[in-house]
Each structure stands twice: as structure tokens, then as C-alpha cells.
Image (cartoon, rainbow, N blue to C red; front, side):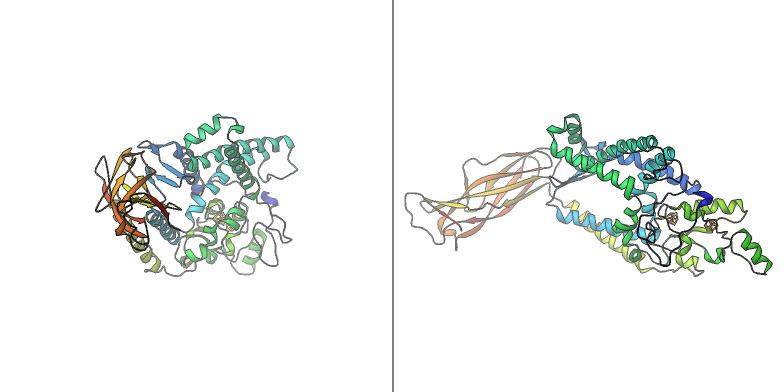
Length: 477
Ligand code: SF4
Ligand code: SF4
């Protein structure tokens, strides 16, 4: 490491995480400080605290963020969305996607280098621990470091990974459920413990072994960069016009003696040594670059020592680095905001018109109807009532038109943000059926202000039965 560092030499370009023979090239980025690193440090630790605290925050008694996949409910900022609100969820997802496209077109991969949990935890938690216990320049698998130090590092990584797994799971099962699981022996919740143990194992695999390959090989956002960026997006780039021809000390003197001027790059390779994905930014914009700005800090410190202007590597755009003027009109910067405005308008309209309950007929298989005689057909139906409010509600169902309801019916109590079904027996005139079915409407209202009518389909006889006194049964296929 340090002065022993030599740039990898390949005949053809290979992944920065591979050696030419296909084996893993372990990246041990050199420690760096500088203005961007200091800003990232403050942001990273704010995010670490935020990521850990958010599942515990309550808004109006509900989690600030909960993606309850099992019951398919999503709570964001204290508002719960159920799977029936697919259009709303689809619009939210679409808005997020377009917002990501817009931010990337403007600021490039700012998320990757500054906010992504992969970068935040790796560079500001795991990597510092590794440097502390193994020393700079050694990686987790280095056998040259004492076993005690490596064991201590893995023990700390395990504790951290368990904490991260708990934090991660809290977003999906909620802190209440997680506390119950944590308090009990694993044997009482074997499935939950299995999920937890698997998550810890995945965290350990990622942060001790896989590392930067998550960004360079797996992450779909990273793979999409070539489509999302344009020549005027903010990127981190090397100013080749100023830096080239690059040359080391003796070469510079030889060039000066020959009457030619070397560029500002002194070929110290510090920008490569600090890069967490192992690339050389002087080769141009690359998919592996996560815009962490560590090469800027490293090069700026070299330039300061040489008493030259900083910014040989800097935040800029491909156009500006190539000496071209920035484009005034970028179509994607017009289209994305228009799309976001349209989606926002649709979202607001949906939210304003969002009813406080959803009532719909649920499917009943193998439905029987009963010929109750005297021209009356009795058919069971099932209604699903979803209470979308934050308080328990009592719902009453009444028949309309020529329908009647009999048997145990309503009122039905439905807890806040919950859904329940109710089975009803609908009575309809036998001669109102056509080819084995008919439609009708039921009125539903709650104990607050909600009221609606719901269309229902009722199965019955194919032809009107005779008005016999005794009841008989039929069924739909
Ligand atoms: S840190 Fe700056 S001077 Fe050193 S090799 Fe990189 S670009 Fe050149
Ligand atoms: S090239 Fe620079 S900005 Fe890109 S990942 Fe490497 S150090 Fe970070």
C-alpha cells in the first residue's frame, strides 16, 4: 500500500474487482480526508441514526414507515395503504422512479456516493473497523494479520450485522413484532429466527466479502447509468486538458529539458489508491464510479502540496470537461418535471377523493341458492369491508330495491386500517333471475359519515321455479 502501490496493467480492460486471470482483486482503499469526506461523514452518520430510528418513530400512533409485506399493508408517514389501493401505490412508485431519473440526470450518482446504505455502512462503519483492527492496506481475508485481530474484527462485524438485520427487518415486520421475537427464545419463533439469521448471514457476506461488487455488478441502478446520464449531468471527472501529458518527477524534468510541458498530473496514483471501487478516474467516466468524491479529496490534497490549483479531478459535466459549452435545453429536464407534475396531480386527486372505506363483493365458491318457496330465492353472498380510517368503525348493510336481507347481518365492527368480510343472505323474487343470475345493490353506511351502494351479483335459478310451498336447493356450477 502507499508508495508500494502499482497500477494494475491489463492487456484488455477487465472488471476493476478482478485480476486479469479472473481471481478476485481485493480493493483496500487508502484512507482519505478532505472537504467532501468531512461532509459525507456528517451525512453518513446522520443517515445511520435515521435508518435505525425511523422504524421506532410513531406518527398518529402508527409507524413512520412500515412495509408489512405479509398483510400487504404499507404505512408511510402514518398513513396506511392497503393492497386494494393499487392505483395509488402504482402512482407513488411511478413518481419515485421519475424523481430518481430527474435527480440522476441533474446530479448523477449522488445517491450512490452519499446516501446509499451500502456505501454509508461500508465506508463509515465496516471499513473503519477493518482499518482499526487490521491496519490500512489489509483486507478481511488477509492471512498475514494476526488471528486474534481478525477474530475481533469478525466478532464486531457480527454484532453490527445483527443490529443491521434487526433494523432492516423492523421496516418489514414492525418494531412491536420484532421486540416480541427478540424477547422470546428462537425455538418459539423458528421461522422468524430463520429470517433473522439469514439476513445476518447476507449482511456478513455483503460487508465482509462481496462489498464493492454490489455496486459494480449487482445494483440495477448502477447498471442503468448509461441510460440515465447525459453529457450535461453532474459527474466526477478528470480534467485531461489540464492533467495530460501526465508524468512523474524525473520524466517531468526530462520533458522540460526537451522543451515540452508536462500536465498537472504527477502520476502519484493517489486518486486510484483511495477509490473504493478500484478504478482509475483518469480513464474517463466509468460505470463503476459511485461518485464518492474520494479521488477529488486525494487529488486536491496533492495539488495543494504542489501549490497548484485544486480541481484537477472535480465535479463537472462531460461537456465542460471536454471544453464544450453546457446545453441550455435538455429535453429530459423538461419531460421529467412535467411527468412528475402530472403524476402529483393524479395522486392529489385520488387522495382527496379517497373514500374512507372500500366495500366490494368477495368471491364465494360453490355458491348454493335456496328456493324458499312462494317465489323467493335465498342466496348467500360475502361482502368485504375495508376501513381506511384511523379509528374503528361500525358498518350497517341494508337491502335496496326488490331485495331483502335475512339472518344475522350487520352491524359489523371493523378495526382501524383493517378489513373484514361479512356473510349475508339475500332474498330476491324468483322471477327476477335471468339465465341463473341477476344483479342488485346493497346500501352500506358507517357510524360516521361514510355511505355507499355496492353492486352485487346474485346467483339463482335458470328459469323461475313453480311457487311450491317446500324449499329446495340449487347451485351454480
Ligand atoms: S491524484 Fe491527481 S495528480 Fe495524482 S495521479 Fe491522480 S490525478 Fe494525477
Ligand atoms: S473514481 Fe472517484 S468518485 Fe468514482 S468511485 Fe472512485 S474514488 Fe469514488
